[in-house]
Image 1 (cartoon, rainbow over the protein chains, first blue to last red):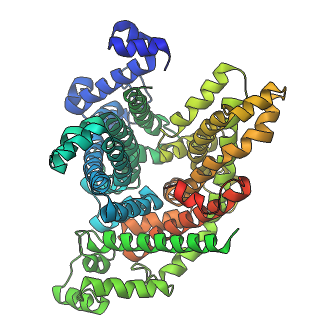
Image 2: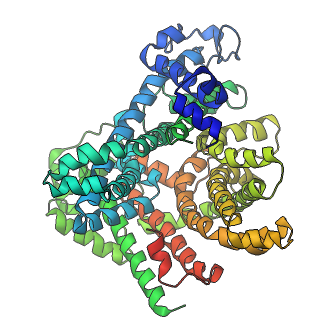
Image 3: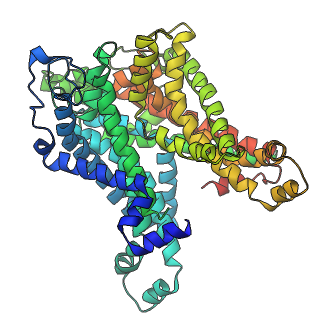
Length: 279
Length: 319
């Protein structure tokens, strides 16, 4: 980190500090817009995402229709905005499942050591040996289709990364004197974990949560593109892009613009994750 | 190379395969969801199933036995190369998979032929070019590429190169031209991941004292990179190559769906849709086999690239 950037971090979010990192500023602003889309979609897009006017079908982007209209004359911008909630709810569920399960397993492995650690570490190795998409597909096969099921599937695929990080963090923090002192005066292990290990590991875990959230957006979209998640006419990002497939030759906006929205969000999240890591 | 090291690595590989198979068994047979009902419904959404017939089927397939016994029977079959039969076609899973491999293998190889040059370009651009903007571009491009959904990349390429400019056919399994767009879609993200690692390890290597000495003695930077640094920077890159090759199978599920190629990926996608459990389990096992084989080859290659690596070291240093 350069000296000026370091000073900017020390000074907190000042105007000049923000302006020096325009990418980060844009990323945060975009995230804010997405947050509005999730909580109050009608503030951003007044049009009905489910019913269109057939006379207005397949119109290109213009002032009235920012993202154009689809084959049923529905406003694509409204569908993208209203799709944010379902797509991101599924992503949030997936990351919560992966982060909580993975972190607990990692804490147990790192703190208990011995056989527990050996078994959990080998299990993590195996989880990492199977491509996570294949693992997710196996979970979808067992549970069946549906948005909740693909969220669970993506979550299972991200457990291993959290286990590995949490274990490494515990091993790092454990060696410090104050943790050894806490153990020596007989504080129970779960309290040591809650008081000392977790707060000290917060930054790397938070950064991983953001990175995994970005990855999970892509995975959830992929699984719904393949047809395992939400079904049309429900607006969901993967489904929206899939709907545009039949109109590739004539209506470029139907796949391109929802896809660009996803890319923008993933890029923004990765930028913010880097800032959290202090880079 | 000591035979003992090779034997240990082979045993480890077998262990990982067994564990992957077991994990897929747990996921597919023990998660909530009734495998017998899934098998009997033949992929229909709400099949009208007769309870008596269901019970009969349960007994026939051995699902009424204790789960440990089921597991051991399946494992014994798998060890003899019998992965069960596809519930939709009734053909042995091994045959179904073997028939799809010739379609996917050229795609996988072509995607590697895209990924490796992309990775080399990124790594060299980041380190060998003096212009600052080129280096910054090379360091930031990979992060952008991996932020793009693979299926969307494929659709955008299809839209531009097939429908707008008519350069490549939209769907063609047998021609070489039809392989270009799928291979780029699959290879570009992998090349970005490889390039990221290669660029970082190359710049780390270039900061090492022996490289500084070589430059101080007046060697040209390009010569230093090719003759000294490249070899050392390749080690971490090869490790990631193992992961990337393993991911190719998963990536083919999406790429073959976008480009309508009747290969392994399409087979897996269809099997998931109709909940064809034996085929999906075979696919997961195949994914693990590809990963294990690649890491095995990479591990055996390490000592050839860097003689300093003792034959017992690589397995430990990577965990």
